[in-house]
Length: 620
Image (cartoon, rainbow, N blue to C red; front, side):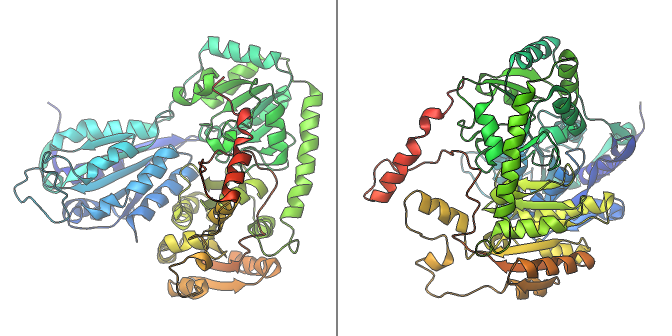
């Protein structure tokens, strides 16, 4: 009989996490980089007791809000390309419920995150307890069951020995290239403190590796045949290229076979901006050049993308008769819209297909035409970001900051108008340095996700900067991790671009023929008093350095000062809510519009929207 050690459930979970390592580029490191936690009666007595002795080795970052803790964990996982994760612990009740949005973000973006959350007592002896939701017909049902729809792995620990199966299963899910996503373990308050005799071997040092699935040889052959027959192929490169570590293989593939590359939002930093095969970002918030290429391509070779509607222009960005070929580690993604599938790892798959294409290159005039379109887009973008060409705008701020960034600096943006503006206008200086959270398009991710990214970045590239771009709406929604960054000395540079409310949704509202209503603060009927928020004073109150600038020239000077100082800095600039938007590079996007309305402008907007529907692919 093997040796055993007696531990509580909480102690065993922590000890097991400490023993799990991963090999990255030949170097071993612990898979779990630590955790984010807010303690309450549902987790502090037992899990808190287990975490304290190892807090130097496995740091626990004190969160300000459970939702933002999850966003920070997502930012950390993105930086590490899903090869490392953080856990989040919250108390039973509202603390745990606050993690639902973050779990959904991680699920939509296929990111690993472990949630260790308090639950009601398994014995039910003290029921009902504080913060417990009672379902009269099902006493086992509670808040934690809500996580079943937003996690890839879910379990409630009802016996100490259950973790012998549950912990490895949760980790296997988080490390799986195809099924990667958040894992949730409900920890009843009594069970957390129950003890068992665990096998010592369970806590042995273990090194994991990310599985690389080779593609089927028949699918590779079919892919090669399709590419050989194509006259105008285009590669749509997604975030999966980076998660696979396949940037070099993608670059070599495009160069060897003469195929232009367009990027999704998640794949925005696969190729540097100046690479000759980079034709630009594609889709609703893309570029004229990439959308020109996508519309004319006779073969669309998607690599590592879930083909979200902003990429496909709600399936109008590609010609209806274009063939679709998809290399993806996930069968679900690879088979979308009746694509010819190559199910497998992007790194291995690109290499295998390239070998099958030995000696073949697409027609040179096709690449030359795409490059000519890209040169025109470069001129358009340069004018869009040029200071002084219009009132202060997101694009001007992006261009100003982009010009002062170091190649290894990381930019973070999410939701609202900034993802579109960053996607269209950012010049990638180094692969993997752009995090635009548009999988779940979640307001409030920016500062929290930036904090998580900075924690990861400080481990690997301490001299680099994490630059957060946020609008005033997102800042007001969730700003407390600015204080977290100050407390932990994880420097952020945060640009707060104030356009007076939810200006991009106001733009959408107006474009569908409606009057401005409840988006801009000035157009909110219940806002009976107009009060400007002093974002600079607010940021200073949380310990950050802060200043307000009036234009792009002042922004440049402030940004230089922020880069030079070691502390977290906030720079505030007002931008125009109406005239500052990038108007070029857009594809059609399907939105719900009223079929019947008393407003003539609403009816006209619907007719204009529907006039383009004939271009929409029907899965063929």
